[in-house]
Image (cartoon, rainbow over all chains, first blue to last red):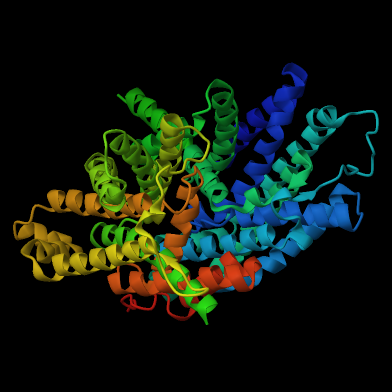
Length: 323
Length: 293
C-alpha cells in the first residue's frame, strides 16, 4: 500500500474515532474500549499470522497475561499508575514469550498452531486450578488506575471509559499502529514476508529464519499484553475465560474478518467483530450461530476479509475506467 | 490396592471414550488432511441425541436392558449429519491449513447454538439408570458393568475399524487415497465418495462416544469445546493420523486424568498439556506418527 493512501485511510479513521464520543451515547464509546484492545492485540497477532505466516491458536494467552499482569501490579502490588503498569506488564510479557516462542517457532503450520494451543491451555489450567494464587474461575480484580497521573475523581466508571480513557486508548492505538507500520516496512518486516513466502529460499539468501520468527512472536506477545491490560482495566477483572482457546479462536476470526493480508485489516476486523457481536447479542441469544455462519462464508468465499472485498471493488472499478 | 484398581478402571473408561473421538479425528485427518475441531461438537450432539432417543424409546416400551444397544444405535443414526457437513468443507480442501481450522471452528460455534436451540442451555441427563447392568467387584473395589461394556465396545470399534482399513477392499482404497490422492483419483477411485464416507465414519465415532457417555455424565453445552482439546491432546501425543497413536494417546491422557484427580486435582489438565508440549518438542510427529523428513 502506498504511504499516502495509508495515511489518508488512517487519518479518516482516527478523525471518525475522535469524534465518536461527542456524537454517540456513552454506551457506544465504552463499547469501543474492547475494540481498541483487540485492535492493538491484532496488530501484533497479524505480524505473526499475516506477515509471518504463522497461525497461533493460543494468542489469547498474552491478552490474559496482560489482564492478570494488570491485576497483580495494581491490585496486589498497589501500583496505581496506568502507564507504569502498561510498561512493566508489556516487558514481562516479552520476557515470558521468549522461552515459549523459542520452542514454538521451531515448527510451522499445524504444529505451530497446536503448540501455541497447548501453551495457552497450560496457562489457562494454571489460572483456573491454582485458586489460592489466581482466584480460580472468579479471577482477580483490576482496580481503577490513574491516567497520566490524574485521578479523574469526578467521573464514574462509564464516564471515565467513555471520556478520558477512550482518548487514551485511541492514542495508544495510533502509537501501536505507527510502531507496527515501521516494523512491517523495516528490513525485518521484509525478511519476515520473505520467510512466509519461501522459508527455504530466504534461509539460502542468509535470513535467520528462526530468530526472525522468534522476534515476530515476541513482538506480537507484547502487543497482545497491551491489549490485555486495556481489557482488564475496562472489565475491572482478569478471569481465565480470557485465556481459553475459544478466545484465541475469536482473535483469529477477527483477523480473517478484517483481512489479514492488509495492514489495516485486523483493525477493521476488530471493529466489525465488536460491533457485530454487540448487535447480535442484543438481537438473539443464538448470536454464536450467526457469527459461525459469517465466519464460514468468509472462509469459503472471501478469504481476504472486508479489506479484501474493498480492494477487489477498487481494482474492478479501476479496470472499468481503463478503456 | 482396590483403590488403585478403581482409579485404573476409571482411567481406562475415560480412555475408551477419548479413543473413539480421537479415532474419528485421526481418520478424517489421515484421509482428508483436515484437523476437525468440530469432532467435540459431534460428541456433544451424540450425547444430547442419545438422551432424547432413549427418552422416546423408553416411552415406546424399550426394555431398560437395551440401554447400551439403544445408545449405540442413536450414535450411529446421527451419522446422517456427516455428508452435508463434508459437503460444506469441500471448498477448503487443498487450501491453507489455517482456513481449514477456521472453518471447523465456525462449525463449533454454530453447533453450540444448534444444541442450545434444540435442547436449551441447562445440562441434561438420562433418566434411566445404567446400574441395571449391575456392578462387579469385591470389598472396596467395584465397577459398574456398564463401564466395562463401554470399554468392550471401544475395543470392538477399534478392532473392526482396523480390520476395515487393513483387510477390506474399500479400506485399501481409503488408505490409497490417504497416501496419494491424485494417484488414487487417476486410477479411478471416486475420491469424493471416499471423503464423504470417511467424514461420516469419523463423525459417527464422535456421536457414538457422546451417546455412550450420557448414562454416566450429564450433557452440557461446554462439553464440546472441553472435549475437543482433550481429543487434540490425545492425537498430538499419539501422532496425527495414526490409529495406534490414538489408542496410546487416549490411554496416557485417560490415566493422567484419573490419577491426578485423586492425587493432585490442581494438576489434572496441567499435566496433560505438559506432556503434550513435551511430546511436541521431543517427537513433533507424536509417539506413533511418521516423523517428518
